[in-house]
Amino acid sequence: MLSKMKKWLASLFKKGQENYPVVWNTNITPIYQHLLPWINELSPLPESLSELPDTTEVDENTIRWANGAEDGVFSHHGMGASEITASEIYTSLKRALEKNDKESVYHFYQQVAEQSPLSYIDDLIHLIVDKQEIHAPKLEAFTDWLLHNSPDTNVVKLAISFTVFFPSDERLKTLYCLACHDEFTLYTIIPIHAMLTSTSDYDAMWLKLAKRVEGWGRVHLIEHLPDEISEETKQWILTTGYQNSVMVEYTAWHCATYCHLADALETQNDSQLLVASSDIIQALLGGGPARDINDYDDAFRCCFNYLSRILEQDYLLDYYFTVLGINDYFQENSEKFENSTAITSLAQTILDNPIWDKLIAQGLNSDDDILFRNSTSIARARGQDIFPYLYEKQLNHPENDLWFELMKTNDIDQVKQVIALAEQQLPLEAISTGPSDSLGLGAGYVQHGKLDFILQELPRFPGVGLSMILCGLQSPVVRNRNMALRALANWKREDWPQDLEPLLTQCHAIEPDNEAKARFAALLRGEPLED
Image 1 (tube, rainbow, N blue to C red):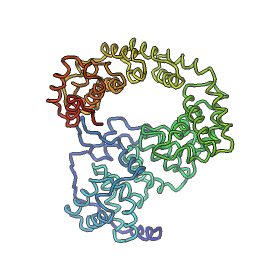
Image 2 (cartoon, rainbow, N blue to C red; image 1 turned 180 degrees about the horizontal axis):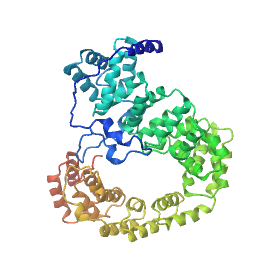
Image 3 (cartoon, rainbow, N blue to C red; image 1 turned 120 degrees about the horizontal axis):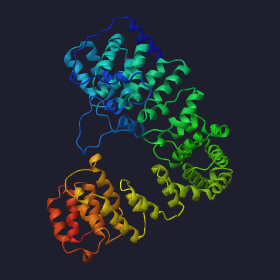
Image 4 (cartoon, one colour; image 1 turned 45 degrees about the vertical axis):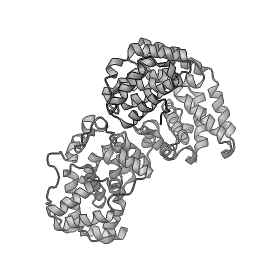
């Protein structure tokens, strides 16, 4: 394929066509122009630029992909059958370049705009090189034209992919500009790598790019690390860069493996590295969507070095669940390791240290919300009753949102306390405005979300929480109504207040959601509710 590509690229010395008919909505800003103001910045995009010009407005009930998420999910978990093939795109592209008329360019453009190129791009690149039919200078000019002028996301993605054929300093700058948006980072990685033949140059560029994206863009970059990673880049990844707004589980294995986490823990006595290692190791232990602890060749040495470093430093709550997870993993998988007891004995020594009770007490009395929540989680894991701390904090600070944690109790008297507090602090009348088909998404439904946390636990406590149930039954959020119905389904019919059945009948009559309506009917008939 390489020899064919060189032969084809030699035709670049011939003149190409640069004038093409505009076939898109010219009222929409070109994506490149939209992102250009941020080209010299080193930090992630501001919110004002993160929404691309071709983003369609959606109503409150529509769930939209986060930037880069659709390609990210499909690249990891596979995608369904493509609606269009590489061969079809190739034919349309060839016709558009040869005819250069509005009809052929429009046909190609619409095909590309409607679907992510992820499903066909590799095959298309091979077709272009293998067939040797497309005039390279024309494709070069066409690529630049789309790259700088198109307002449509999928078209820009395809144009980015074509730049792998046409390395230049100017295109490198353009790719750097586009790569700052999570939607395009994946597509820029290979062309940028191809344009920077020096390993040190690519490492420096990689680090700049990784600092400019926080979501799927960073995930993709970490999955495409430089062949030779500098110490500066390794250190940044192991202390900061491993983080992303998607899931650390996607990147933990790459970070630990290629940045040699086990070695770093052995040679560096650094608290920042230790805290970061807690996140990385915990993500590896958690498994999930990517390679995990079972795929990590250095798992034993990494965990041993991690535990050894904890014994040398001041304990932090950040370490607890990682140590607990390590202990559980090596106990459950002792047959895989020759000396698993070396790990479990270290872990148990750390877990048995009475310092945890002191740290938990400090955290439970802290005004730092993150520290407080960490303390409650660890205290609960250690079998401590934290309800009094949670209740007092919510009582004295109504702006808090501790309803989920408060409802994790098994004590019915404590649940009654929570209900009484919720009656004081939640705007029940403002929530129960009548049914609609709302999914309860967005800032306007924060209070409905708080009600969720209470309603979802009430099936465990039949006869308790009528005020919450009545509110939920009349909420505009479908989820609230379904949770209220499930809670009420566990009540004995004789415990229903006298006016409840008429209310349920009225609610059933006006219920807009078919599934919720069926549940209202089943409840009135005394039948079990379907999930």
